[in-house]
Structure formats: C-alpha cells, structure tokens
Length: 165
Image 1 (cartoon, rainbow, N blue to C red):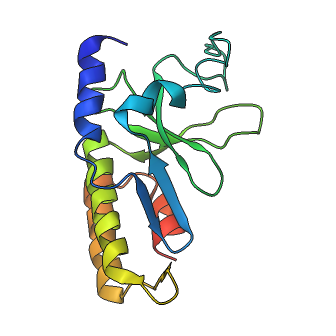
Image 2 (cartoon, rainbow, N blue to C red):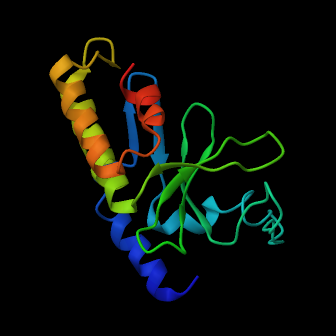
C-alpha cells in the first residue's frame, strides 16, 4: 500500500472517538493505528510473513485491509484500499472462503456511525448492572436515519442485527 493511502487510513482512524463500539452484548472493535499491521495476520499474511492473498473466488484480496473485528464472532472488518472512499466490509471467517459483505459505502460514514453508537452507548449505560439498557424508540429512529444516510443504504441488516434489536 502506498504511503498516501496509509496516511489517509490513519487520518480516518484518528477521527474515531472509541475503539470498542457496543450496545448490550453486540459490538465491534477497531484497531489503533499502531496495531494495524498486526491486524493483517491470518488474512493477507500468515505468522511467518507469507502471503495469503489470492485472485481466485473466495480468496483474500490484496486490496483488503483489516481495521477491526466483530467482538462475538471475530469476523474481520476491513476496507477496500482501491476504492477512493475506502468502502467498509465484513466477511464470515472459518467457512473456507471469503465472501465480503459491504457495511458502509465509505470509511468516513462508518466512522460517523461508530462515533454516534459510542455516544449512545455512554448515554444508555446502566451503571448498576454494568450492562447497556435498551435504546428508546427515538434513539433507534435517529440511529436508523444516520445509518441510512452514512452507509448509502448498504447492508442495513448488519446494523439492525447489532444495534437495533
């Protein structure tokens, strides 16, 4: 990856207010800039530095760059560095092939939704049980509007499954 693209990724990640985003028991974690190379292990390269990248159907692509993971499943969250907007994807691991599903049309949209989710999480935290309480209907409507706007209506079920149960 060229240095300019790496700098852009770092710039976007610096806009993230929280690294661990969750409401209730569902959530995801986004890496800090200093750990991004480690995030690639098991995806684009193995622990010995050998490439795991391929061009056949279901193989990891050279232009995919892992930025985080789902907390429950460990599935990667990654960006496409060949896309100007750094579209954001996820894919189920452990099934023998990679089938990416877009979750945001842009990295900045993903960051904005993540920041709003972090804000909601802080606001709805129940300090007595250390668990998050349910979102109000107003919070859910505002969140849905933000998701629709910032993702350009991509993979709404991803967001519903995590944050609008």
